[in-house]
Amino acid sequence: MRDVCVCAVAVSMAVFGLCYIVQIWRAKAAPPVATWVMFFAGCWISFPTYAFAESLTIETVGADIVNAMDLFFVTAVLGAILLRGRFKNDMDVYEYCYLAVALGIVVFWLATGKSWGANKMSQCLMVAAYVPTISKMIRAGRNTESYFGWVPAIFNSLVGLYPAWYDGKELAIWYDVRAFVQSSLLVLLMVYYDLRKRRNE
Image 1: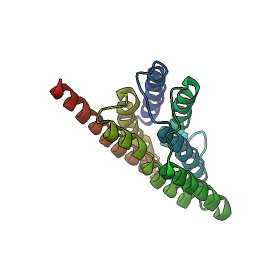
Image 2: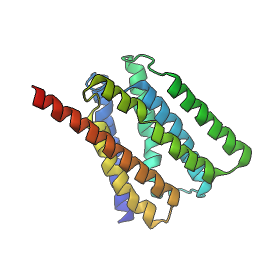
Image 3: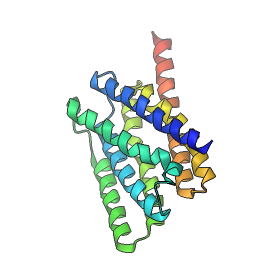
Image 4: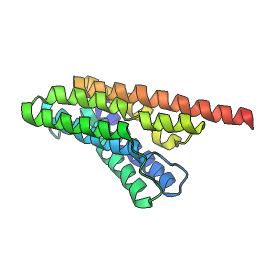
């Protein structure tokens, strides 16, 4: 069952990640570059610190399959946004402060070697990465996101909980729970704006 869940998450993230990238490429989705820069920073701090904290091996990487696949997913989405060129530098003081904090976490990790603490801090950091997307939708008064990007995230984080629980990896469980809650809240906001649009038509 553990291996089935790991494979399901890997396939889901690959397929729906590609669909999301295609939507970005066709300008059917316009995610703020700031959000994905922040996710990029958070993921690339989270996974290495997890790997050191949990003594990760090839055999145990399945426990944190969501974070592992996020490395590729987030990097590919950010690459699509940048390569397509349909973006403006929407980063403001908040985002630059976020990146400064991310750098601070890396410095803390390298200076102290406390991978567990650095990973927990990176999870708190990733909570803040959703703010630009939510802010953009609220300012626009409409859904600016694609369901291909976020509904699968709910499925993946929920299914990914089983391997994390099965292997007893607390940090992986925390990562999946955080991703599930935040993706669910974001999708609810998307649904709200889509329903409001239909009522007004």
